[in-house]
Image (cartoon, rainbow, N blue to C red; front, side):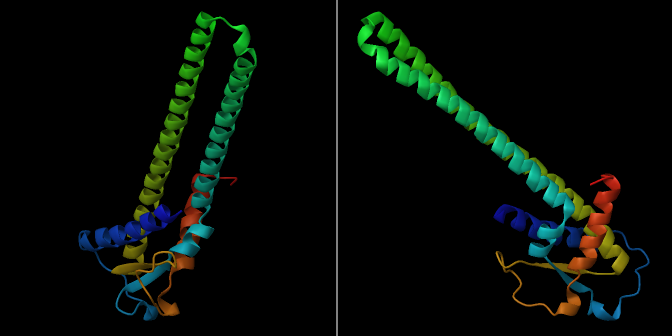
Length: 191
């Protein structure tokens, strides 16, 4: 979660920098609330109310739970094999014990590798989803800043307080949320 807040802060900073370096066009008149083109977004609120982020979060929780369930089932099956071996160890000859122990050791290594690979896959998927979130927010904020005539968009978060205070008249979080959620609904009808 903290990485998403940091990512969001970077997104907002990058999007506003991109908006500032865009080719000059006829800038819209600044609103009375614009105070020199500086506004901010509360990233905590944005993340808690952005439908696309909620969908990503649900997807990642589902993937993680599914992976945990699969690993737990395979771990329990392995433990049953170990318990069965321990019960029968005295009735096995040396060659059978050695072969069984070797097989169990291989299965344990395979299970550990599966756990590591699953964790890596989940991490890669989280990074891919963060990248998509970044792209969506950056593209939206670039257009939003051009439309509104803003020059700088700061971010505020209790978890990562780079900005300690901002007058409420400069908070455009709800306006950005409406636009982002409308855009998400258009891309994903029925959600």
